Image (cartoon, rainbow, N blue to C red; front, side):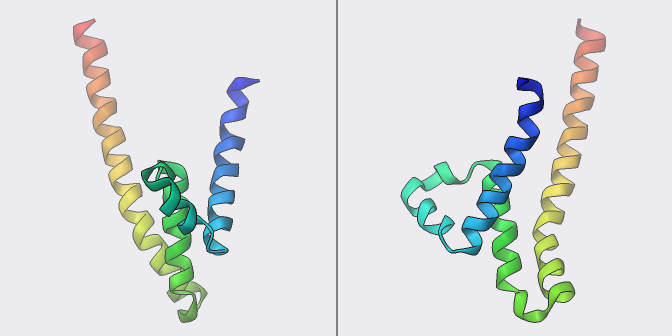
Length: 98
């Protein structure tokens, strides 16, 4: 049961973070909790939702989607590259040192 609980939990945290950002509550929680509110999943969801809300007046495609994914693009690229580098290091460590 523990193995299948992770993905729904992360999805729920993302949804709650996006909703709280949309209602303007997440920023107040961030002021109270400080860096504790910037955990990777909820902090990233907050950043994405904030970018979408900030540019909604420009339209769905050119405002929301374009500006929201400017932020996400950087995270996805660096996340993919760092995962690749860590995978190569792990492979080399496991193959040649063990």
